[in-house]
Length: 206
Image 1: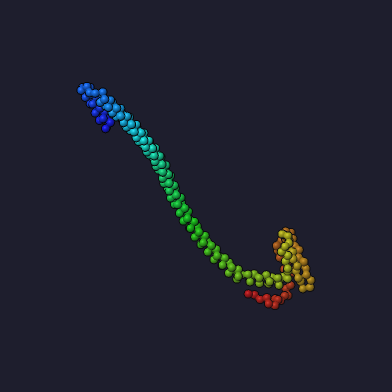
Image 2 (image 1 turned 120 degrees about the horizontal axis):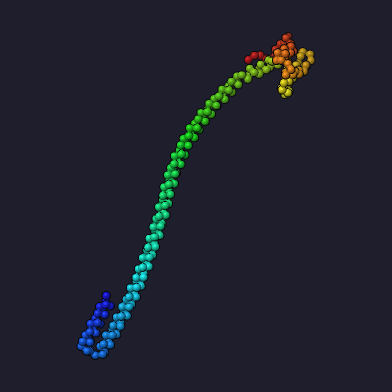
């Protein structure tokens, strides 16, 4: 604004000079002063242009930063939406896991009850076996004492083999059960039993 006021002052000075027809020296001074003012005006304009370029550069940088910020916000918003979806899926998975856990807990409880019941049954079987085994052993001992027959349990299927320890000699037994009736086999075996027998010492019923 000062530069324009100087130009206005020079213009008034020139008009005054022309009107009053002053000396040439004064005109020269005014022209030099006018030239200085023009240079100052040009410098001011260059400075203004530089400042304008700087302002435009700053505005461009700010605009670029704003665009980058918007893009970053958009990406963060996308990530936030994805996290929300993941959270919902995780909540569904957690609910499924909780339900599965409850089911497994129930199944585990049932298995424990079955195991306890099985242990009770095994204990009962052991007790029954403890009671019945001596009777089975006694029956086997009694049968051997009566029949005097030592059986061959490794013979072929359908074959009855053993040794009958008679009063004087041992008689081998070899029968084909596929050719004989069960009654014939029973009668033959009972025919080997000596009717005059006495229990061996120490063999008493339980």
